[in-house]
Length: 407
Image 1 (cartoon, one colour):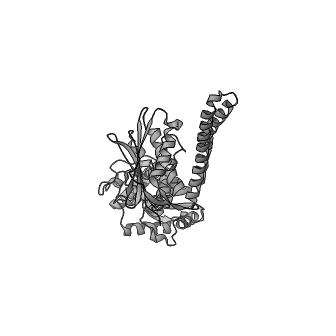
Image 2 (cartoon, rainbow, N blue to C red):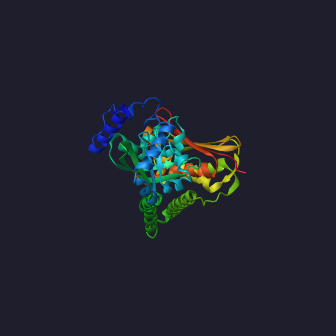
Image 3 (cartoon, rainbow, N blue to C red):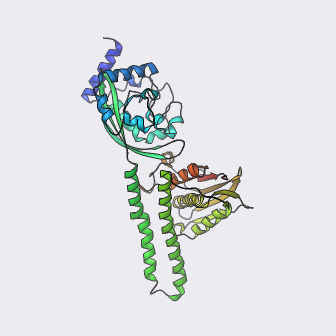
């Protein structure tokens, strides 16, 4: 028996037994040939991938069944490379010829923004540490166990996200080990979860506060009527903003959001928003400082969308700032546009930074992370700007949005 045949026989034995492979298994031989922050970067050659494709087509009675399945399925080799895909997957990625994607990895085919950030491609960046799809693949490949995970893929270049549930299952074809990997779009399910949490938590809390204040009015001291009216007005505005913000996000994700550029003074807009949050209940015990620009910073952009981004930046900073902390806000001119920085002294752990712009990720709880995601989506896809951040223990956290003047 040849070495190659011996290795395949061993792989089949491991797969059928269900026991984890030894750590010196040949699958790990090339793991460090190309740097990777997570999964092995090594790839089989094009010739080897096409040989595996032909083997699967010729010996796997599964292929016709997979083509009949209505959701997307790919078959992967040991290096997470595609050696077969069904018709539903081809339709999902807008391809007609299966051979055009053979040898690629999932993130590279669906347009994951992180798949092009490292020489090793999909699975090899530090962002991939938190990708459910890569985890499911590795469990099927290395531990020979089926798995199911959820993952959120940020797509390039539009910045939108795909919410997926993925399944992986190891199989043997012709004495070789492969993985059947299937995907289901669960975006509608996730949007429903987010909306439920939004209405049951944030909006319910705001509406409850508004109701409580209204109940105080009939018996309130006449000297407090003006104060209570002001609080009711702020709660009402907050309620409208929360509903409007969710509406804009839904329209942005569906591609139906209309951008209405107008000429405005960005420094003035930021100042008005900062002043409003200086007296906001969430700012209690914290101080907001706004550095007004020395002269008007005139840009042409969508006032409502730009305001939404700035509101989210300030809200996030207020929530992250410690008790008695300071949130510093400034607006400066930048290459004919405007740059807004919002800083607080808090520091985000690395795992938070790596997932920050993912839809639904939040340190506040599952399903509530829309602020940073919507900032990225609105600021970059619709206002053609740039949204980023920097966070270190020494300097704290600064969110920045740079908006060009739109024609």
